[in-house]
Image 1 (cartoon, helix red, strand yellow):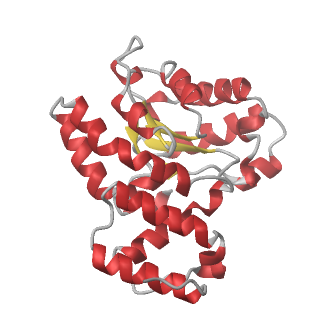
Image 2 (cartoon, one colour):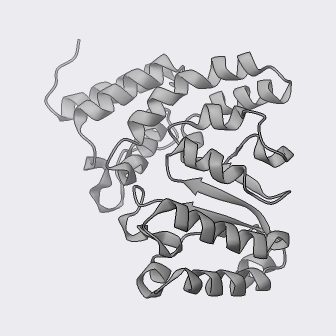
Image 3 (cartoon, helix red, strand yellow):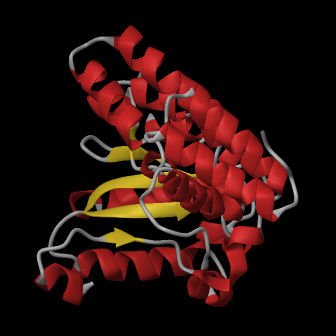
Length: 254
């Protein structure tokens, strides 16, 4: 934390596998987070990553039951509100996110990590007693893949054009849900696949052979959904590379 702050960087406190292993109760989480937050110079973003993304984080905040975990997380935030910019929730449960969002202290943001329901969470419902209760800000893995659409959609939302926002962003949701389907932790394979299709890198090879984590038919459907959402930025290149992948798997194309 100190090293990052010395360079002027923003801090995001990721969920800790080590803390899950050693903590015996919610009080242990409170003790660790209180100590870290007291030392931070500027407000930080907390990240609550669910077990669907990393099984080693199951039971975070000292409870396997969500109500208990939420109460502990909110207690930490409320006790250190001046040092918390917001919390990113990656639980893929919009109702839980909205419920917690409405309980946040004034000025503490909800950053959505819900790659299934981000469009409606970002657009918001205007409900709640405080301005920060009515919508979630975006801090999403899928934005890497849908950056052009996300930028255009957020521009529309900033102009008050909710219909335009949904018109641009909604077609990307099926792509995101496909990419983040179970086992969810393999979503990075789809991110790299899309980067390869769009010419951002020259190969589709990942550390540990993770390019093999998804099936050929998964990639075929990903290609189709990306095309439907207008996210193949260089269509001729994308088609050529998709044909190459199919050929490697013994699938002939015309």
